[in-house]
Amino acid sequence: MSEKSIIELENLIVEIEHRIEDLENASSKDSFDRSSEINCLKETKEKLQVKMCNQLTPYDIVKLARHPLRPLSSDYITLIVEDFIELHGDKRFGDDRAIICGLGRIGQEKVLIIGQQKGKSTKERIACNFGMPNPEGYRKALQKMELAEKFHLPIITLIDTPGANPDVGAEERGQAHAIAENIYKMFRLKTPIINIVIGEGGSGGALGIGIGDKFAILEYAYYSVISPEGCAAILWKNSENAPEAAQSLKLTAKDLLAFGIVDDVIPEPLVGAHKDPKLMANTLKKYIMKYLNELKAIPINTLIENRYNRYRSLGKYSEE
Image (tube, rainbow, N blue to C red):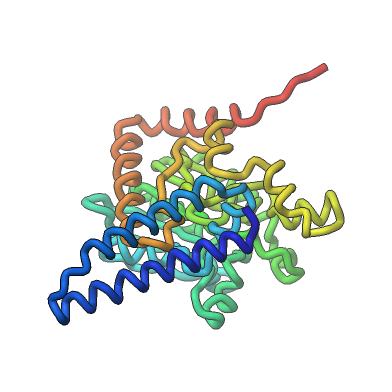
C-alpha cells in the first residue's frame, strides 16, 4: 500500500466518523430516527479499517508508529499510572526531557516507570529533541533504576525513539558509554523489569532502556537496529528505497515475535492506538499487570539468570 492510499483511506474513515457524529447530534436535537443510516456508516467504516490493516506493508507500519497523533509515554502515564511523581536530573549535566522517569502506582503495584518522550507541539518536540535522548537522559534513567532496585520496586520502560541523539555534543558527553553502561547494569538489577515498545524502537537508543525480563511490542510499533531510511541511505545511497529496506529488516511486531525477539504483541485498536488512546491504555495496563504478577512469583536470582540467558539465546547463525 502506498503512502497516498493510506492517507486516502484514513481521510475517508475520518469523513465517515464526522458524518456519524453529525447524524447522532441531529438525532438528539430533533428526535428523528437515523439509526439505520448511522449503523450503515459504522459498518462501512469498520470494513475500511479492516481493509487498511490487512494491506499494511512493513513501511506502512513504520509510518503508523510515527503517526503524529499516536499516544506518547506521557499519555500512557497519565491514563494508567496513579500518584505519579516525576524525578529529574542525572546529577552531572542536566535533565533530559526526552526521557521521563517517575514513581507511581499501576493498580495496587508501586513501580518506577521510564518512558522516552517525543513531545506533541513543535515547542515540546524541540525541547524533547524529537525523542532522541542524550547521555544525561540515560544516566538519569539508570540512577532511578538503581533507586528502584534499592526499594524493591518493579521497573517499566516505554520505548519510543528513532534513536539516541547522534550529535557532537552528545558524543562529547559520552553517549556510547552511557548506553553501554545501562545495558551492562540492567542485566544485574535485582528487581523485575518490563520493556514495552509503544512506537519507534530505534537502535541503541531503544536498547539504552530496553533490557528486561519481559519484552513486548504494540501491534503497529517497530523495533530495529536502524531506521528504514538510514538503511536505504547506506545500502542504496537513496532514502527512497526505505520501503524495500523495511521489508528486509523484519522490524514489524509479527516478524519480531516469529524470531523470538519479543515475548508478546499487544493488540491495538483498528488502524492504530491513536484511534482510541483510552482503549489502548486499558489494554496496556492489563498486560503490565499480568507481567508483574508473573515476574513477582520468580525468585530474584532465578529472574536475573533467566534475563541473562534470554539475551544470550537471541539470534541464530551457522558456521561453515
